[in-house]
Length: 552
Image 1 (cartoon, helix red, strand yellow):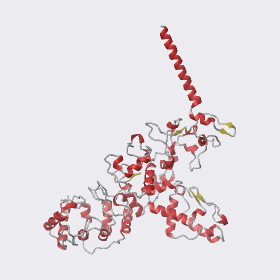
Image 2 (cartoon, helix red, strand yellow):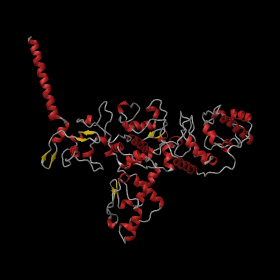
Image 3 (tube, helix red, strand yellow):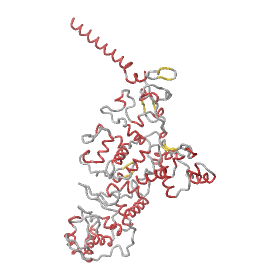
Image 4 (spheres, helix red, strand yellow):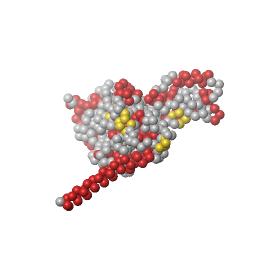
């Protein structure tokens, strides 16, 4: 009995000590309490208490302001420890929006590791400092972004025309210069969201005509139509996050939409990317990923060598050459974290996209080609040859464009190649008829070859089928397959190809070949195979047509 009493006394004392320690630790030793204890306001020491920002419209509850006190509502005057400093000026008021909606992390936690999401099983850790602007993708979309070369040209035009003399963009420009040059005009950092006066150029010209001297005469002058269009592109894409917009232009130059959907538009071969930035890092394999085990590094390595990060991946390496562009592509993928929002918080750009069907990308041929086609056909249109993948055709090859009609190009893009990786793009989640016309024109500009009319009927060949079969078996089946199913060369037994290709196209393809590819011209002497006469080439085409006739 005595021993039991002693044991009960010791355990009670231990429990009491544990409770006392828990109370002391909770009420005096918490990190956020120590940080607040260093703070002051104009009235005196900062009151130590748990603080939070609750935004019911966004569904967030953030206690981050228990440490970052000056970012909370009504407490911007707090001073003391570095963590108590106010947020730098941004478009959105942190005191209203809170922290996690932009930065990620665990809003209701008060310990650093927990709050930053650097703990096991928390699916959304805080974004790294270098990738903070990826949080813009939570709410915003950014419309009308062009491919990278046009985006660079637009930015260069804005600077070349000295618009920064009067206007501020992302913290640059809009200052009075020595000698009276420049002035403080409207800030243009958010024109892609707020809009701007479409008649600005005519009004600027009128003010210049009225002015006798000063910045209206020194810094502004007539602008060419080409530069006006570049300025429109620039203004339409200003959302106070220039690095994010530039990264999106790289994305739209890398062919990602050829396989992946984004906001309901794109291909079906790969996973939907709309919420790719919300992947749970705890479910990813970082074995072959260099650097910190963060999502951005995983994306970067996956783009560089997909199969080494995801076993069995059929994704070809990203068609990006520069290290900086690879980082931008990973950064933009990280920004794809589009949450459902209360209507009161849906920004203008997202509203235009989701409610009125506006596309996120520009509709010029270069951007459409870059977004949908570059991944397979290359940014120069000369195709891609990758280990473990069927070779992707050269669609800007001059030999091809000289004999392919615009209608053939359009029909190929519309219907694709059934059974191959080339899908048909004339569909609601793909391209419109106008888009396809723009891509066709861009292909012509890539190859530098205009469309040439063919005076012959679509079907004119009258060759000997049996002879054509023998020639095909001997000379063509090694690349194109015994029954035209494809191999190292394209599949010729394809209903869309046979239906849209004219006899002239097929004859000229065999006769001339394709420069820069394995397809040599059979009308030219070659030590590897015998030269074919015109009748023999026509016989091969007649044999190819029998596959078309046998189709149901």
